[in-house]
Amino acid sequence: MSGGVDSSTCAALLIEAGCDCTGIFMIVHDNAQQHCDDAQAVAKYLGIKFESLDLRNDFRTVLGYFCGEYKQARTPNPCVFCNRHIKFGKLFDYAKSKGADFMATGHYAAIRQDDAGSALYAAANTAKDQSYALAMINRSVLPYILFPLSDFDKSHTRSLAEKLGLSVSSKPDSQEICFIPDNDYAGKLEELCPDIAKQGNIIDSSGKILGTHTGIHHFTIGQRRGVKVAMGVPWYVTKLDSETNTVTLGPSEDLVHKSLLASNPNWLIDLPQQPFAAKIKIRYNHKPVNGMVYPQQNSVKIIFDQPLRAITPGQTAVFYIDSPAGLKVAGGAWIDRTID
Image: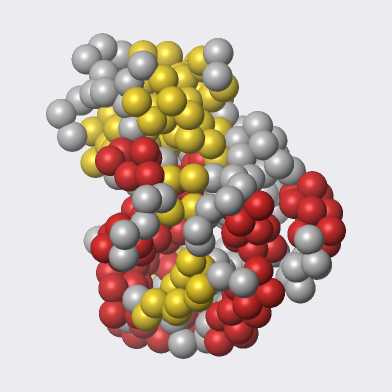
């Protein structure tokens, strides 16, 4: 239970279904007290047991990943990483150690059974679907996960929470990463790893110096605002290089590519032996697009049917397979680079 409306409604639905529930709040940073209080108040109202689990030491792996990726001029996805290692890792292990049969969360995604066992599917409401953020969790946990909100949209969830008398029914959704409550990524990075703030050059594709920057962590692929270089026409961040500490700018067409290479794939289906057609997302709010996925030893090559803009190293590429039951998550991998 995070203290928000989704997990609170999730708990209420499970109780209505006759489940014996314990609410668990994860403490992963020092600014969580209000959310913890909200979660505890909901648990008390629902009449269920409540625990706060201090995972701040474990969460250092997420912070280390966050800093490490930016140091390598990659744009990390800490929520995807956290879901794998903390929420559906450490928290899941704790729940099982306490005798829980299942762990439930308020994610908008679905677990369905097919011939191969438990599988992850996109939510019925694609506008709120959160399966992308779950694509890197371990396949072995799928049989023990419940997503009671899989068929809801957010307005339905809020309406139901209000009818159930939940105090958080109108609590705003969080728009930030949990450990950056003010959304100041650069400030948090400089706090966690001060050596990341190094001045370097802003260049064009020919190497011509256009200006200077105060750290590549201020930039991401496709960025236009804040580059502080006047070119007379729109130019965008097209490349980040940690070795030379340079930011490359170029016109929009330099952002367009048709293929990518991604590493450390996480398969939520049996390991494919042949290339397969899929719908692919390259970032959380990206509409899935058609392409071919080519499994390799510890990587995947993806070739899209149509070129895409701003493929970003460090983000997750998630591949879905069309099925009668909906969009099934085949797996995901960490984007390394474009290859065309």
